[in-house]
Length: 248
Image 1 (cartoon, rainbow, N blue to C red):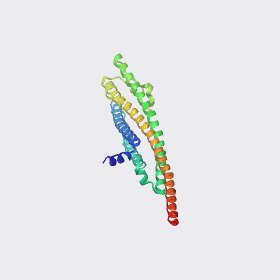
Image 2: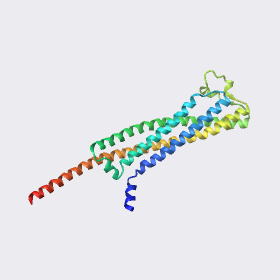
Image 3: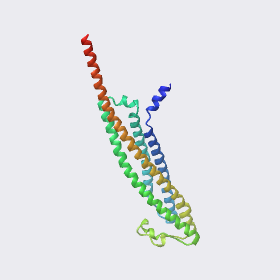
Image 4: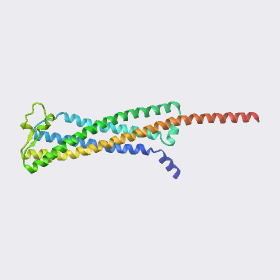
């Protein structure tokens, strides 16, 4: 029983498993916080500035697709990790075709992971900018609470449609200030901060994936050399046994 349990434990790719848990956790938090942050932004813009952001629904659907795609990639890499770990590797990659297929699958997944790492780095930079802008909004809300003045967003005119008037970029009414600060900016900023941290976690998991895939590629390649040496040794033993029988 102990040997069987030890054999099963030796077949688990712990490094890839840890990277998969990090990836699923990061992607899950990212999708939830971005979906929630986008919803709060839509409500705030509609109530305060009376603008309809129709394209936000498409962006929210993209978040769902990103979550499903990253989960599928994580499970694929985990499956490759199981195939390339412990005694499973010696059973799966015996034939020459299976070894070539294993190396190609590792190389393809490494390329995909590298590209995704670049994409998530861009997403992280975007989230840092968004979080910085919302932090500036929150500081403006804090100053307005003490001075009882309007919130002037004219310096952010590039975020409004081209035909927006300057007076429409100012928030003066109490219910609009509440909708902008308390209901919108305060809650959305927390969501975007969590999304930024989750994107960083996803990037770390992708780097971890790259190391695991590189190690699995090396294991499969070295297994091919080991298999060749073992076949040569078996041939030598057969020749030695044949010559020994001929002598006697």
